[in-house]
Image (spheres, helix red, strand yellow):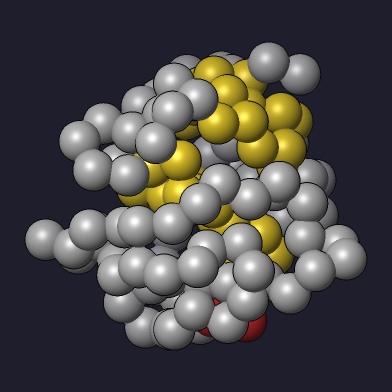
Length: 130
């Protein structure tokens, strides 16, 4: 099992480079400074039943199918560090990451309608707040 170490980014990667910490890619920018991936990271989407307005746990969730666009809040990490990523595709490649971050405590992420998927690892459930 891997451990994620890093800092929480703003979640807005429009003006800054994007980093990744996955099994298949290495860190490339400012949002995550250092880390290693959890073994639960996968290249394809995981279809889990999510109640309306909640992202229940670890996985990769398709925007518009598994989760809706909007602003989500998590109370933070379960055991290690809460990792999240907004994805442009589900290839598992580092350049698919639009924005990502690692949180110890509460985190807020805006999932855009143009995002392909939202990935989360070791976070408490995400609840839609807007």
